[in-house]
Structure formats: C-alpha cells, structure tokens
Length: 214
Image (tube, rainbow, N blue to C red; front, top):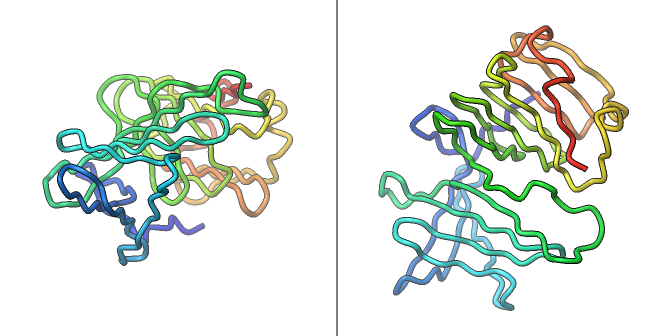
C-alpha cells in the first residue's frame, strides 16, 4: 500500500503533513491554497458565512459551520516561510443535532507533544504520537497511517467516525484482512479503508488498545 507522500511538507520531526498557504491583506485572509502533488491549488472560501478565516498572531483560524456543528481548525507558520501546517482541530456539536455525530469534543492535535495527546488521524498524511499516552482519534473511512503507536505507553486507537459504530464487536465485523507487511501491522476494511500501524508487531497490539465512541 502506498503511503501517499505526494503533496506533503516535512515538519521538524521528520513526519509529513499537508501544507497550506494564505494570502493575508490587512489581517484578513483573502485566499487559501493547499499543496497537492507539488502544486499550490486554490481552496474555495465560502462567502455565505458558513466558513470564516481569522488571523491571530502567527496563526490562521478557520471556522466552518456544518449541519451538526462547528469545526475550528488552527494553522501555524512555525518557521516564518509562509507555509502553514495544521496545529489543531476541534468540533463543537450543535444542541439537538440529529443523526450520528462525533462524540469527542476535545482538541485534536496534528503534531505530538511530550504529554498525553489526542492526535488527529487523517487521510493523506502520516500522523505520529509522542511521549505519554496518546489517543489516535479516527474519523475518516480511508487509508490511514499511524506512526509511533505503543501499547506499552497505553496509546489507544479511538474510533469516533460518526458512521454509527456501536462497539468493538461492531467494528470487528467490518474487518476483511489483518496482515503484517514488513515491520508494519495492517488492518483492511474492504479495499477502500485500511489502517497501517508503522513498526508494530502483531503481539504489540490487542483489542484492549481500541475504543469505539458511540
């Protein structure tokens, strides 16, 4: 399975994240771009009030109103080169929201710290934990890749997909294949969804390391 590295920038830890740029005029974001296969592609900015960008110091904060709540994403230009990486993401679910919605309401980080973190697991980029007990929060049904998962450090895979999963047994019913590929542990859920745990051996993970929020 390809790790899909095209269109990423490396952070200082050697892990790869999606990169963004913003055109800022008088402290306002007038245009947004995402690096895709080495080319900066323009991202639409909705002008109906459902999506807003605010500049806060060296960070850009994007707020998007969706049917069941609000998503707040923070971007930072750490080294001042004009390229921004996502720092964090947080959902606020609207009162009375219908259907299956994300249960985890805390802040998700895109880069680890030395403390216990909730790490965002997203399609199209590698995610990595750090020191401490990390929760890798999964909301995408796609090909996902996780580095530095450690059962010994009490890391946990948290499924918060909003797809109606009710239990670990329910999750297990969708698994079509589990295998080892080199040093990586891979779980397939059909041909379009998989989770690759980099450097994890089969005896280094169990269902005790998995949580399903329902």
